[in-house]
Length: 328
Image 1 (tube, helix red, strand yellow):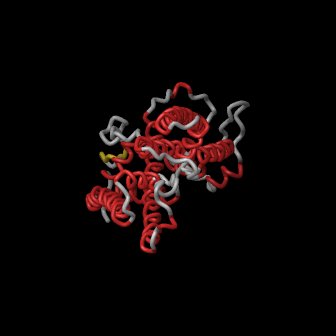
Image 2 (cartoon, one colour; image 1 turned 90 degrees about the horizontal axis):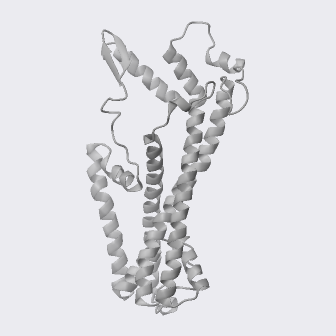
Image 3 (spheres, rainbow, N blue to C red; image 1 turned 135 degrees about the vertical axis):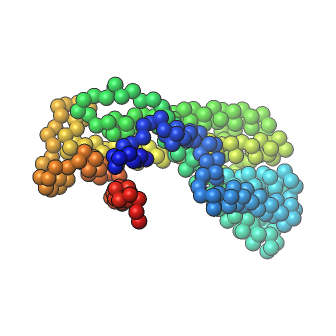
């Protein structure tokens, strides 16, 4: 944020209140931030709209189960859990597709689409929240500048630290999935009196949302456990997918950035510092006219792909307005 004094522009230091704004560092904080941030014109629509949509889907799900299909509350809740998590073992054990009338079959079609759309919205929000939380948690960590090696790109080093951070998160969350799997195997085998192999197949289908349907709980305790376990397993699995999906793009970005930095004279991890690519330098600075440090910085950032041309033009427009005394 520029501050003006005698037509001189400086940057506010890192202790400014804006820099101290707390960013969400967990998935739940990111989801909460999604509904709370934004313009005052629309934030109430988000705050009220999302719960209303969820309540509408729940209401439709229970109307479909209790009224249309004539299921019990437990069977309706069971069907909702395995549908919204896309596990989809099939209809409750005492129901048969051949016994349904035309209205029930068409209602089942609408129910399926409604649950899939709800599941897609929830999973998309979770994945986006995981991405944001991981980025903010990494940025919040203190990175010692004294570890910087002369002649190496700070941006490349930061990208590699970020990749290491994501790998650590993936390992930690895969461990959580493994613990959840062991808990599920022992719990469902106890509740349904299944063998270890059948319990393992059930856990694999539930955690991965495959749900072939050959093995599903029949007892009251098993169905209640399925409701809770499928929701928790889907949540944890979505967190893992959210982190893993960010990793390949980050590695590709790091490789591209490292190549671009090498053309500007930054060394790789090993070896001497290379000479600057004359063609790149000539394209960046086509004239011999002296350039301000800020202008050089912007051109280098454009070459590295760290900023967009539109962003630079907007920054120039802000500077022009400030230089003209904020006149339109």
